[in-house]
Length: 100
Image (cartoon, rainbow, N blue to C red; front, side, top):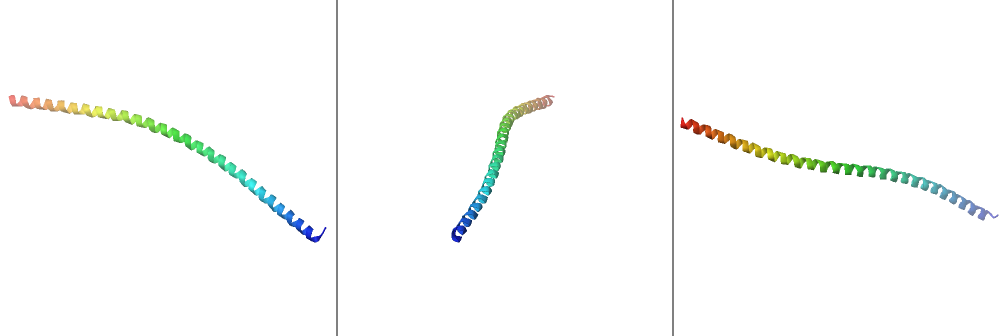
């Protein structure tokens, strides 16, 4: 075998060795990225479940708030009614004082 041919063969072997080394690194990198993707997908699922639970809680809170607002309005109406009755009683009391 000629020296030139042997040298080319050695260069090709080295190049092939380098390519195999790079291929192994790329495969490892791919596996790591797949793991990262799986982890991210799991975290995303968890966040989406939390989001749904929070939406449900917000909806429930809004319903409770609406009920409380209605109760508050009814209580205000009752207070106004009681105030009117108090004013009527005061007026009657004043009228009775004026009659004496």
